[in-house]
Length: 161
Length: 195
Ligand SMILES: [Zn+2]
Image 1 (cartoon, each protein chain N blue to C red):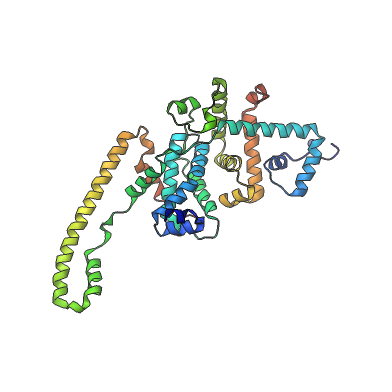
Image 2: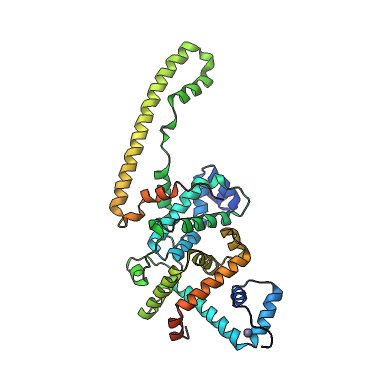
């Protein structure tokens, strides 16, 4: 009790298991004989108990991972970015020996087909997106936390430190 | 294949995620979902939104794993994303926490932990609610350091890395958070001596 009382900030750190061995020893030996610091320590300990009781941990729902996968799937960029030119150049590289005429013919046929496939793909992806957004707005009773909002929030904030 | 992945370190997993390996991502998400969910739950005080926000955080991890520079631990990086999300999006709808009482939560069948299955008296439920409300009124940084320290058992050193603060700054924030709460809960504190 003769020594100065412990700085409450240090006492708090002590109770959190922080500080050097030396500091911890000093605090222990002071608090042992100091009712004032004991009272402070009791208050902090009681607060810890209150916090632990009030915030019992929760478990993720069984749908956590499936729901997460769905979100990622819904958020994947559309595959329609591959242009027909990309395909032509890919085909060019692999089919050079066949000759120019065959290449042009092939490019036309392949380009046309792939174009169709891409068109179908992107329209089904769009349909799916519309469908899921309708579905989620029906299921969601708090519209403010809709997926659309979520991504509006998420997208501009790229790049972590 | 999955078993092989399960033995992989976080560093190996995150490399997999950066290469869009879905199995690696699933294992990483399984490993961290509990922590991420509980940080957000305790920060927002809202169980329902916590799960939604946690999923958003993993979506972000999926998309930004290739920007992980391997300069810190993977866990630190993940916590940093969680913290940034919570602190930066405080004004956006999701994180403005409507505190739910344990009553509301149990009605919705949302409480699953064993300990919470124990019967809580009405008075004790109200206490819990008051404590959660007081925590929720803390300034964001106070609340976050408290959550990381108190509930995630992070050391001051780890918190300083996650929040990009010095260790003394963390020590001070945590103390101020506690002092703030002690003051806010003082009428109740005195009444309830013996808890
Ligand atoms: Zn003293």
